[in-house]
Length: 151
Image (cartoon, rainbow, N blue to C red; front, side):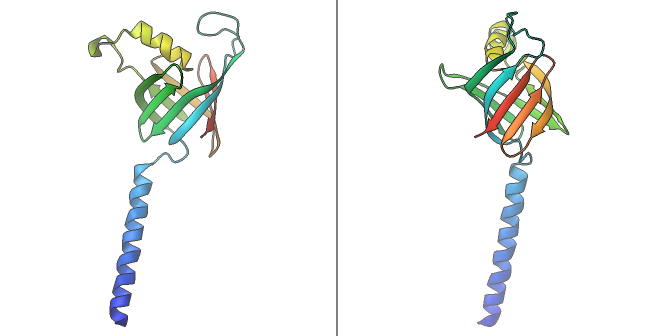
């Protein structure tokens, strides 16, 4: 009986360690993965995407959802949602929505206007990660700085 107990304990420990390793590999970007609320889009040059004078826009209803190398950006109302690819390399985050093109049945100009409204500079944009921890994220692009709160 004692031997059976020892074998069951070893098997249980093995299964727990395997489960832990599986969960770790499922979300390799622990700091980035999950949902982020876009709080503010700052325009350091003082000009927004439409060419108007603007230092910043306050958001709050725009969500960036990361899982592995997939990103979904959505606005609650009106219901706008886009899926793209996210690539994180050291302190650089590239967000790519170039899959929305004429070959796939979309009009890139219209998509760009909608993506700009969600805080992105272009259909494929590289951001420097100024800050990324368990609660806040700040991304710096060529024209914008994006401020997020983890949800």
